[in-house]
Figure 1 (cartoon, rainbow, N blue to C red):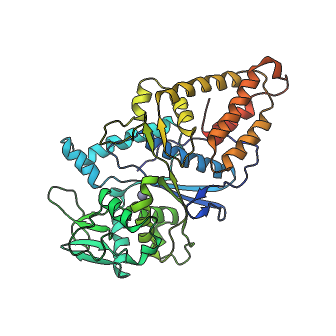
Figure 2: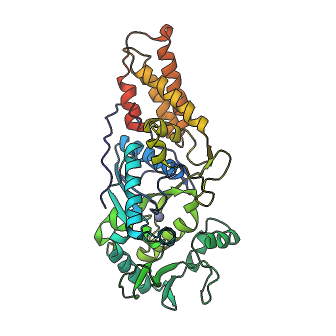
Figure 3: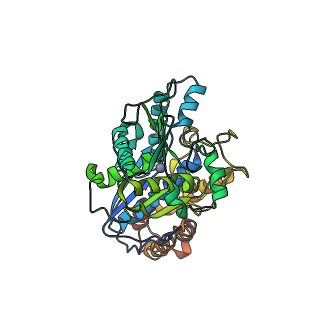
Length: 414
Ligand code: ZN
């Protein structure tokens, strides 16, 4: 699948200290010069709501930061273009599932482009890699992690249960809510996920040694990450690092079951731990309520932009929050962001401003401390407001370095 257009990062002459991201496995740390990052992509039927956008912007900030530190960022993202929610939506609307997916993928790419998100080097739809998925499943079978119920192939999760990120009771409840089938008769453990589903009438399917059918949800990310971050020969590679990739990212709703399952499957394929760090973003609510498709209150990026909103104002508004916390979206946030962006643009348009270097260094410190973007933007506003006040503006410094820094580190081309 073609990714969206490349976004250039202007050079930036500042020192970027190691990024201190607080992950579930302790502080994130670099391992060598290549930074292998895998971010879980959309299921293309409801793209791109503000929760999606906030998530992809968070990983964009991390990719920008690691690039500015001189790392070679290898970033892969998937598209879950074959899954129950997509097929259900297509059925409900009497639309072909494949064309619904294509429409939504195109919309997502347009939104990412408008928000200046760095594109993944490989943007991969599951339907493009069914052969790779089938190959990986046969390896998992050879490694004795599978069993069958009426033609459906299940994965044995029992050896991985001590890594469960939440209590078992809670896991069972969430598993049932997010596509799992804990109560199916014949399962060895209620949390065993479906690996290959035998074809159901009217559903798309593919031939495989496991029969005609389609992959379950989690296996795609294990396969796409390893196949595209380590190359086609990953299944035979003896020298994969352990853990294999540097970061797996996504919304906090993916902690369980998705990231837990895809890591277990990755281990079942290679015998190695999946990711050195998992980074999760908080959920975005609307005016005091949870934002969800069932409530029908999703706010879409494309609709805001079509109504004339400046994409840089939206980017400013969405990154101006602690990435890991849940947050509320309100129209006030947009209004105040619009005002702040106007002030910054006025400062950047001045011939002379306050010394940007001093402020940029403080902003980098804030960003490096667990991506404290609100703090960085506070420092930016102080620079902009002080630069606009005649008394403080010495006629020595030009705004160029600040403009380049905002573009490269924060993706704000103002
Ligand atoms: Zn995923």
